[in-house]
Length: 469
Image 1 (cartoon, rainbow, N blue to C red):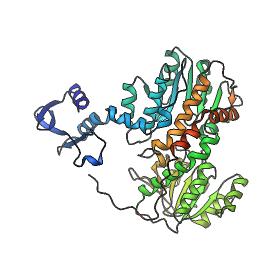
Image 2 (image 1 turned 180 degrees about the horizontal axis):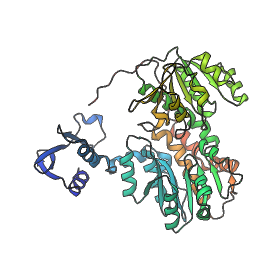
Image 3 (image 1 turned 30 degrees about the horizontal axis):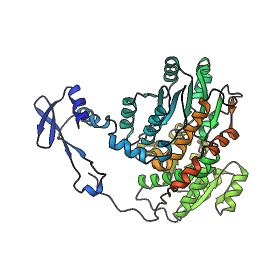
Image 4 (image 1 turned 180 degrees about the vertical axis):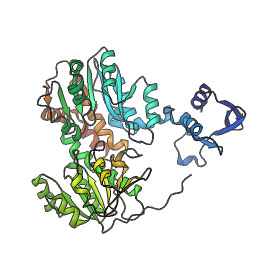
């Protein structure tokens, strides 16, 4: 409450106390009533929890409403909240590997697990941290950003200018923790002279690895968490599970049982995704350009074809998931999409579907707000969920912090390995060496001993309606 009132006064609002609450006023008009009170049922919340609620008066201009709401949204987390966040990530919280002598650039999602990771990196000796943030609509993105800034972390949109600013102001070499191949390709093409300050890159995603393919040689070592056995074996099912739950939330009135689904890309995530969809009693087809992956999918009982157009035409999928990290559907495919189809990306950025080409074929395009965008094609409407961005990040945390704990810890272990002046990593990809470091770190054993958190398999029945306030 004190933080909210301090920010309100700084922006020129007057405050008047009234009982257990406070009015924020503009001149003589009461605009917002803030109330701080214990929960009605203390058993539903952690001990010593108080709930901050706000009541906005009617008829207030929308711009002023946004200003008032931002007073709350831009407040960092309380000590109780950060304590709970750390408790939910025991591997990361107990990490002892050091980051002395280096600064970090972290390309990250503004989710709560990033708060724990950044604070832990500072505790482990990182001299400075710049977070280059992805502009996805995470539920708590503004609070995460505010908290990072209050911890001394620089937060900026992803850009070469932000990287240049970081590398020109820090006194130590930098290790980059990337999520999607943003930093190294950008520096190689636009500012190669800055690479002398980069000791190495830790890459989290396969889409980031793919973005490095056009470069014949890399001047710095890449620690590949993305290609590690640890990430591929453990994390993929949770990503798939979260993606399917997100789709069900976006189209809750659409029955899925017995309906056709198509998974494009049968890698680690695609294989798990097909399994989750099958558990919902959907009829699942799979396409992959790699014949061995198609063979694996066929042996598991999925409908397969090396010709994507055949599956679109003959299988008639209601749900189409793109998981390739390179692009799933292009101009030649959109005329074959069945009316009423829903497209969902489980990849980085909006690379899975050629949206400009889709818009070019559409007779009309409708903005469906949080749900996504509907394109009215010649054969009927097609909906791109979450506007083509990953559904598992859409207005939600991608997975629980307990699930992301292992990968977020592995990223800091990789950064620590590259931080050591005498490390034996060579320029370019170091897949085998990365696997060896992660295997010797003990992270998998510790994760197992804590009890692997079970994924939430979506129910085949529609969840009960929830009241909204």
